[in-house]
Image (cartoon, rainbow, N blue to C red; front, side, top):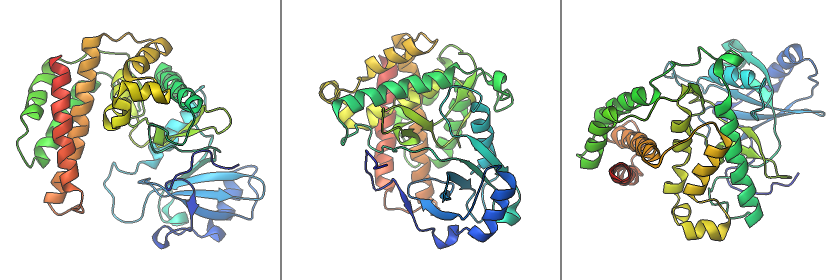
Length: 350
């Protein structure tokens, strides 16, 4: 099938040398552990920004996707492919669109690092949130499906699918504020008054506690596969940051796209492109989900989401300062930290 939304970040490439997988080793393992697997097997590496190397496995009859930890020394909690496999396997029991999970291998002797194999889902990953290559109808249908899909995810009771131990229940926003405040202070490079205000204000003005749900952590257009035939979300990708938490906080972080892309910030542009503006998109989420969100509470959630992303950006600047990250984009991330902090504090004051 021809990809409907072309991008330099879509498709596959020849495996990088450091990510090489020997098909002669993998083929017999898959034949033993996947009931209908038949070789011969060809392997290519997906293009894109995955932190875990991701591969396209193709046989004469079927295609699969393999995700593995990268080689080398890793932080203990990073690149948790076991958690990704666990959540995808559990969601196979629901109407949330995810690939079928086939196997999880903890044995490093097979491919050098832990990995799992799942179904390959045909479709497109779209990297620009205003969908420049789509039609008006494409954009409206894709945004409607994204909203419906995250609402489906937030309707799932984790305990009903065996994920009651997938994270700490309750106090999600409070724990996130504490965590990201510490991360920000540890990497702080300059005094930002609006960030100081957010750090002082948020712990005492948390939104009301919502039911504990499975949260994706980075739900976005670039983390879903769009079915090219009907513009529906065919699968949610990249569950590395998933945990138990506050569904509205998860949704508000998703809505940062409306602030990060200046085209979506402009309501007139949204109307011209036939993309729901932010108010319409939030109203659609309330209609699709069980949650009713007041304007004041929504501003608090968005202020929190901007605070969190500002802390992440500051962390990158801090790593540049400490010499543990490349320095060419340091100024850009510092500007983003200041801009997000200012915008977040302005929203909360409203």
